[in-house]
Amino acid sequence: MHVDIGNALASVASPGVSRESLERLDDQVADAHERIERGMANADHGYESLNLPQRTDPDEIRAAVEPVADAEALLTVGIGGSSLGAATIANALDSDTETVFLDNVDPEWVTAHLDRLPLENTAINVVSRSGTTAETLANFLIVREAFESAGVDWTERTIVTTGESGPLRDLATRHDLPSLKVPDGVPGRFSALSAVGLVAAAVCGHDLEALLEGAAAEAETLTGSLFECPAYAYGATTYALDQRGAGTNAVMPYAESLETSAEWFAQLWAESLGKDDLGQTPARALGVTDQHSQLQLYRAGPRDKLVTFVTPREGPDRPIPETDVEDLAYLGDATLGELLDAEFEATEASLAAARRPNVRVEIERVDEYELGGLLYGMEAACVLAGELYGVNTFEQPAVEWAKKATRGLLGGGEFEEAEAVAEKTELR
Ligand code: PA5
Image 1 (tube, helix red, strand yellow):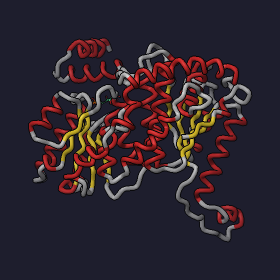
Image 2: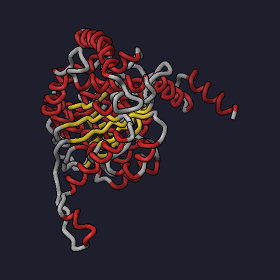
Image 3: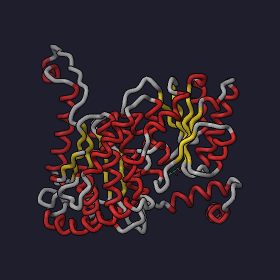
Image 4: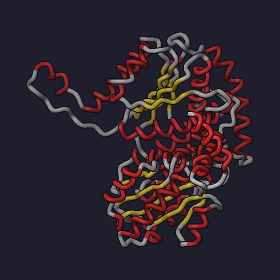
């Protein structure tokens, strides 16, 4: 990925960061890089995620999905880090396999999908690192029952990805299901480049090697300086801008196929950095759609935001038909791609003219190699930012609290958190 921070500098933006401040920050980046390298070398919790391009075995993943490789549809049952990486890849790339991501537990929505899908030709990809997440397990039980009611043997159509032990691992063993292990030391939101994200990609026929090669190429760029490494340039600049008042980071891809990547980014940034009263709030936007809504706020609202554009340099195109309506003649000379590019450039220029900080993240095109680089680059940026904030990037106590409380309220143990919820509810 390529990162251009020119529009985030103090000479052109407010809040902005001066070149001198970035040079000073670069000493901290060098120290952080040493810690990151050490963590990777020791396979320490979290840092191990940055080793995935070398550690993930595409053959093992392809072998596990072989029984369902001809599926017409793929139902992924998982939530958060066990869903968003796979969804980012699947939603970005074309495939003949329809992909559905069952993360929410809205009964109407779950039922609608199960009623609609051709279950006899649908594969199930159930993913949970802990193997205990209530939403995932509940949805999986419902999916199993739907398959049974339709007379389809779900055990023939299910792949499980989970940790070494836990209820989901027990279930996989009991039914002799093809299963993969979530690698040790890799938190959910950093697991897109493991089986967690790649099982769905394999069923869809995507090129796993290219995804991992793109990520490996990005890994090669990790050096001790933000002036040399695009991922660190992004992580350090966003951190510096947050310190100067840009507490919100609105991520705005200019490609419909990258819309889910903003959702993935939002989880990565919020769950990793939102600790100890620190962190930058991610917002999700889509170019050009949100030029007609959120852009007003980004250009003229409070000066507490940074906009991150994510844009492919090239992509498929389509000419706009000519018309004899004089006022529309300019459109007939253009293509949709040219219009999209013009919209992006106009938006970027419009923010710059209003001295609003923005950063451009570019990939060459939307394909496996470039996506691998983007996912890896943003993860590395997040790890670097976590080092600069001094937070524990790889834990998520607030998320775990709510997970335990939910289970507790339903009688599933761990009552301490559930009791706190019950007390609060009574107070209202
Ligand atoms: O990043 C994380 O740790 C979380 O978002 C988890 O991925 C999410 O809570 C799902 O957890 P699990 O994979 O254990 O079902």
